[in-house]
Length: 319
Ligand SMILES: C[S@@+](CC[C@H](N)C(=O)[O-])C[C@H]1O[C@@H](n2cnc3c(N)ncnc32)[C@H](O)[C@@H]1O
Image 1 (cartoon, helix red, strand yellow):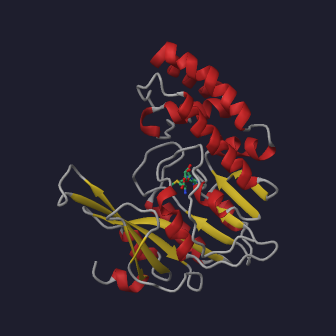
Image 2 (cartoon, helix red, strand yellow):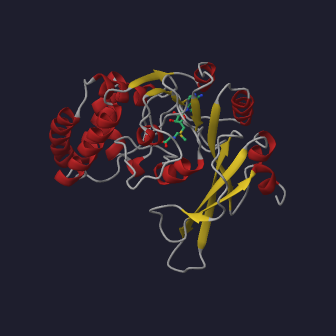
């Protein structure tokens, strides 16, 4: 059984990228949570996204959901063995050559094909060749991210990197009892049992107007109410504060939880003084957080990326 807290030397990276991917926060999440799964316990994620957190936990049993059917279908194909690293390599080698000769025209041809047929391989192709690696769908549910302007995107090395990521998630799922399901968060939370643990990473409020990522104040509030009524342990990731504003919702709706904070400092330009910080919160049901060890550095973090931890009450007061 994969217990938490756990320190990991190597963070696995999944083949699908999405906004708000938590790759850098995996060590922080793992060190902050206390969870001792029983034989039937499940790791539950209602907002799976790229799946980076679940794949690194690699629990025996899991319920992994998202409203984005393309993400769920992609990982379901891998879980069932219909999609593996060999299939992915063959596909990307052929399609990569077509992209190299056809450029933007070929990218848009695949995008059109995907919006009709919804093939998981085309989804991977678009996810890795589109502009800035973002995932965005219009109000009709059609993928609408423009070309990333790199016709030579699928070099031999890049294909190998993606193939290795597919092989890694395949290994993490092997012989495990995992269920991937297209579901709204509320239905997923309704399925939680007392020995399960629920990790929630909802979209940022008001940030995206994307088909799969709309997230309102009302939904955020409803999530906190339903989470606090869960019969099991839980943790929720949420942005807490940046240089322009703080997230009032955390104070208003999650004050019953223990709070751990991970601060990222982004350098703007070359000057040390031009640093932007973004505080990421992990809101943990009381009894499921590891002891507060105060200020510490995340393993493998860049200089200037620091983790500090406080209780919800402590952090709320100075705001
Ligand atoms: C911030 S992302 C999750 C990122 C993920 N933890 C990772 O590290 O890659 C939020 C996800 O929630 C999904 N989502 C948005 N609204 C949802 C809803 N109502 N129910 C379930 N999933 C939803 C989006 O499709 C998206 O994949």
